[in-house]
Amino acid sequence: MAGENGSGSGVSISLTGRVALVTGNSTGLGKAIGLTLGRAGAVVPVNYFNNEKRARQTLAEYEAAGISTMLVKADVTQPSDVEAMIGQIEAQFGSVDILVPNATCDQPQRPIEEYDWDFYQSMIDFFLKSPYLLTRRALPAMKEKRFGRIINITSEVFHRAVSPFSAYVAAKGAQIGWSRSMSQELAPFGITVNMVAPGWIPVERHLNDPEEQKQGYFSLIPAKRWGVPDDVANAVLYLASEQASFVTGQTVAVNGGMTAWM
Image 1 (spheres, rainbow, N blue to C red):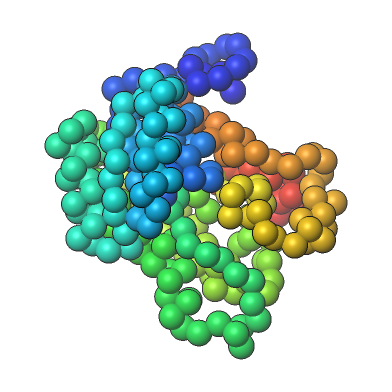
Image 2: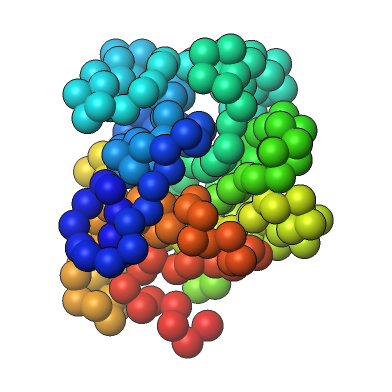
């Protein structure tokens, strides 16, 4: 996939003039997505909630890459925070054109007896409530422009029925269903809603995962390599582009072929 952000030849993807909000993008996949969209010309704020030091380091990396950016603190599961965050972005850069709900919390794998409803609710809040709040707030301007890209970061876990992981899998299933329905509702307005479903792509929060668990997963990957954050970021870049204007309601699995048969 060619683009102003990276290598390759062919059609160039430009996001110049677009404002892209990638939530939870001070680290991990979100950070890579933001860098890729920014290098293609988009304005990309840095959203964080807990770790300001890390967010400021990411802000400096974005600025060093020539990306127009700003720091916005928000708990994206809270309506007042979402309202304030998007208001700040609009005041400095204009309305949000590209929305990538990416923020998450810890995702421990446990038998159902070890989960309580509060944990289930936290999963629903991040993967259903947050996309709903963000989309509802950004939607009026997208409809007015007759342009919008909503790209939910879902997961292969729903398609693979991973266990013991019921809370996360259930919430991701809800996010997938919501995205598919929204794609139909918003298509007449020139707004696409798609999903990128990564496999297990080791980032900072996976540093302490058991080695045997990592190797067990790796042995199943048809591509015989680990995915890297840029694999996900490049899929998001395409879906955010003008070239993807006729693609909506779709899931791009970025997992080296793990769900090719599903």
